[in-house]
Amino acid sequence: MGEFFRVLTDNGQLFVDGFTNTVKLFLIAAVGSLVLGTLLGAMRVSPVPALRAFGATYVNLVRNTPLTLVFAFLVFAVPKLDVNIDYDDSAAVALTVYTSAFVCEVIRSGVNTVAAGQAEAARALGMTFGQVLTLIVLPQALRAMVPPMMSVFIAMLKNTTIAAGFSVLEAGAIPAYMAERGEPQFAVLLWITIGFLILILPLVALQRILERKWRVAR
Amino acid sequence: MRIKRVAAVAMMASLALSAAACGKEGEPTPSAGGSASGGAQSDTCKSSGATFTPKTDAAVAGSPAFEKIKAAGKVSIGVKFDQPNLGYKDAQGKRCGFDIEIAQYVASTLGIDPAKIEYKEIASANRETAIKGGEVDYYVGTYSITDKRKNDISFAGPYFVAGQDLLVRKDETSITGKDTIKGKKVCSATGSTPIQKVRDEGLTEPNNIVEFKTYSECVSQLLDKKVDAVTTDDAILKGYAAQSPTELKVVGQPFSTEKYGIGLPKDDKALRDYINNQIEASFSNGTWQKIYDGTLGLSGSAGTPPTLERY
Image (tube, rainbow over all chains, first blue to last red; front, side):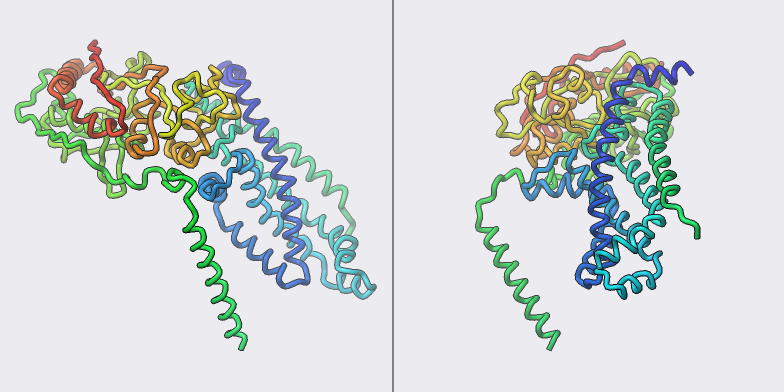
């Protein structure tokens, strides 16, 4: 047991650095994919066929590409075009591009839970597309989106570990360092798991708060 | 009608594209190195040209490991497979490199034809276990001799003395040693001892440290000018330099010492002494030099045999 705690205290700085970078990467990619995903989601439910086609193409292309390949494309293929992106930025872009496709689908499914009659009634009252979306459809759709959206973000938090293979010193890179320092892998991996559990707790709490806030009697 | 129009648009688009491609071709290419994709040109294995004829009268008195090899008529050797010109397996499954040929040479002195060798790819972390468990008869693959490892296994050698060094682009002039990499991007395998040394000694700033899972990814980034140097043992770096001798070079100012030995079962002193004698013979009769010159020596860096350390 003493050995278990020693692993953490002896290498505290590495754990702090690693998880700080994980949180940074997560926050940037979370904001980015929420914005991009919402835009894509709006495209997929919009009345304009060209936008719908673009949204559908994006989702089907990106969602079916392994995340590692998205990373590899940005880090190994893009420099061949003489475009230089920093490794941290590449990681944030890769996560954003990838997670957006999932956010988009959550938004679309949320919107689809609202009965078509609601939108028809709003249009009958003379509301524009924007008004229908913001005043009638989204407030009802948000409720249905919360649980799947949180699953998407929890998955994304764990997906950040892929960045370790592409020169971002985050939590996923800690095991490699510790193996080289001769630390017991079992304890190392257990500490990393505990670290992720601690990071996920606020997300779970947020989900609960939002669900309670938007709850209605049906 | 509609189909015709679509076809016309498509034709125009393809014309525009091909015109653009022509324009691009006419431009001067920005750099020769930019287009090279990390050693695809020399992926096929070539031997150094040294030949190993199995000794017909090989005998090691009092060695259980040797008796086992002799009875089986074959030998299983633990090797690396992803280090060009060192321990490498090409797309056709052929093996080559400095470590591989040292392994073949040792096998021939034990009376085993190199064609009868059974290669086993053992990751660094599992080497001691594989030797102790008898999964391999011996191991040759950038295996540093350390006192800690001597508790579990024995080492013959060293057959090569490596040291942490820097691999740079051929036209690099500002990097001449470990104290000249401040402000330069330096790449190595994630968490490896060389990169931890760079980090701990502050040889460059933390945000200039670049880490990938494999050295070949680092080399690809070096060729694409996204990093300025790759650091690890010079033996590994020379292997990559030998792969692209017109684009890469090893700085040649090692700042650590790693003695590579042949990993053997512990306490088989008879076999250890025998292999040490054979390694010593290869130093003096030119076999070692021939193997080196035909593999790592292709990098342009000269190499000399080390001094044996018997125990």
